[in-house]
Length: 76
Image (cartoon, rainbow, N blue to C red; front, top):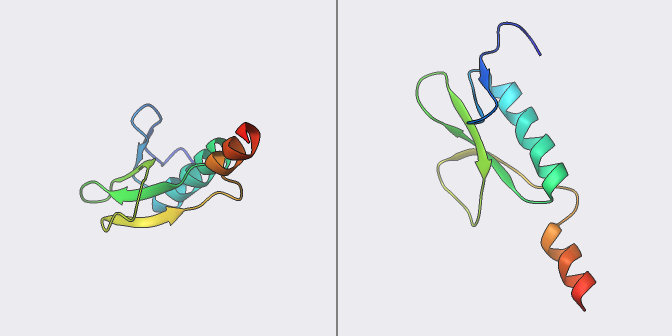
């Protein structure tokens, strides 16, 4: 991680948009859920899980696999 990037992993906030997208991609691929990058003030970005189509999201990351689909296939 670049020393100039201020990042708080607990709240998933960072001041670098590229790092926010990277965090969202990592979380989406691990969990199988969609994550979004949101603006939370001047020069700050937040990564969180999204449902539906939030208009405030700057970027929505969709994983290559779906947790819900995998769960449904397991149950049936």
